[in-house]
Image 1 (spheres, rainbow over the protein chains, first blue to last red):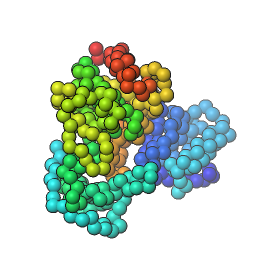
Image 2 (tube, rainbow over the protein chains, first blue to last red):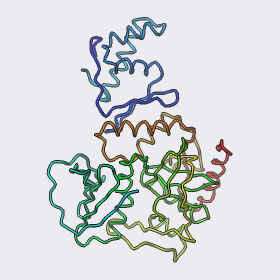
Image 3 (cartoon, each protein chain N blue to C red):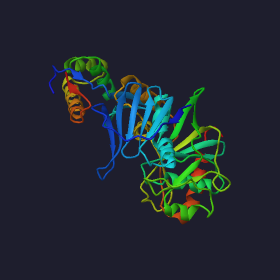
Length: 90
Length: 287
């Protein structure tokens, strides 16, 4: 994944908040992924069509976190989601 | 409501390329093929029957293969086709059994073979009324979730029949594709004909625990389990899919989900029933 990438979410992949977590689910395959509130905010920003770099900008403005840390978290999360085919790069 | 009609028997002709989903047994045999049709969906059970379900799920027509018995067709309709038709009507339908405890319904969910029917039969043969042995339909009324009664019968394998059901209990005629017997509700197996508020859902474990064990589930885990055990006819229709997921998410947010494991020994079932009733009463926030 590169910071200039935008994320594409397949039609059958959906996210819903339940309790303190957000669950991402591929209803065709049954693959799922749980996100904490920080992960859920990254997901929301990605699903708005922002590049990963823009996602990092927004996260840095909202949370007290270094650029280095947030970039690492965003790349790590998107790599995991891509490996499970819950997202692809646009 | 769903209107059901039975047409003349006919051989199954090839259906072209509108196949969009299949259910395959672990041994590779095809159990069900799902085709898109002009007015809805055609569900083919090879060498048994074709069922046409209208898009709104309110009408089902059946074309049997010649020489398939009426009992087999009714069995297929009630257990396989009707739950899918109800899901088209916006109802949530799960692979689950349910029993009445107090004035509410308690559901047992799990994969085939986990003991849903045996557990519910154990309640129903000892005085607690059952609402369904599979294909559990749930609807919301004024913000509350209610379990709807389904067909008043329970399907059991032979060992469960011998252990639980009195000789002479009313039985439906046998069907061609399973050795499970269907017992009809009556004085021996009591049935609840009215909808009941859903008070608890127990996901059945593999039976490795030496005694009944209950573990509360977080909403996110409950949602995954509910998705796994729900019937859904068309996974490619995004609008309906989103509505289905929304409903499941709302349901998952309730604090009513537990994992339940217990030893699968018939002689322990009385103890398991007592443990479940005690747990239901202890967790009842409305009492």
